[in-house]
View 1 (cartoon, one colour):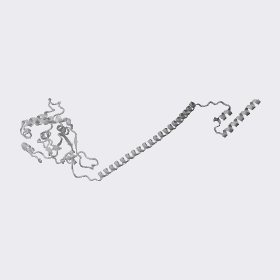
View 2 (cartoon, one colour):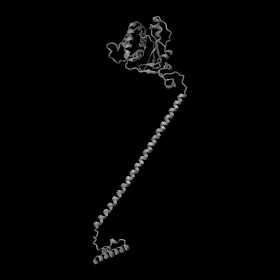
View 3 (cartoon, rainbow, N blue to C red):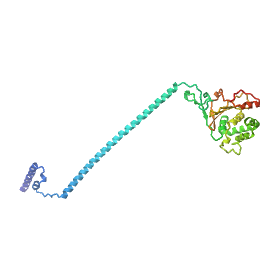
View 4 (spheres, rainbow, N blue to C red):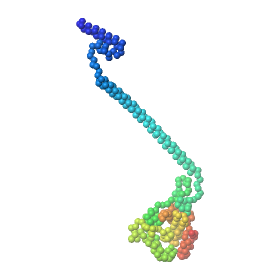
Length: 331
């Protein structure tokens, strides 16, 4: 018991000495006096131990620095992403502003055009984008609201297969351009029935020219050539002769308007007289441009008062030959 008390007192005394030494020298536990007072064995550090500790310290420092750098890198990335979002939002806003400005400008332009049309007086000049011989009031097409009175005549679409001239007549006579073979057959029958008259009036009395006209009308309707869905230029519609034959076969005038205005438009009056003398047929029309025939879409009720083109001088010879008279002007 006394021994234990002595040990305790000894320990207290040693602790007091350690504290006193520590107060005098902060290094305390690291010098030989503290080692002696504690009565412990301390292994001296070798150079290798010191190098290992230095490396461990360096590695630890590197790890800490790397960790710090990673944190900084993540912060930089987050900041960059935030900047990108702000930049994208700015670009989107600029695009939206540009679109709004464009829409506003187009709206202002449209408004000016509408007011300009409403304030503009209709022109009194009667013109046509098809032909100057066709008054615009005879047109089937006008722009909305009647604000513009020129460029108002339209053309019907006719298939380009070599039969276009006959197709344009078939559309007006039968309501279907595919009935062109019927038109050719009617013309051929009328031509053969009046062979001498057309040979003398249209072909200068020459049978070889007359035969070419017959061959042209036969092509595509006789068994030998009926399978041809198109034809060469040798069998195209001849405005000079075929227009007159068709006018006679259907006892209806035919007006031919030339796309090249250097050539005059011509009206082909029929030499045949309708059985119904009270009948006043409206002329059919053909529009020729760039080796293609189509038809002008006109308003029938207005063409009744239209001044039609002149007729050719040979009409007078034909009417005289038939002992007929008519009131018309010649080219």
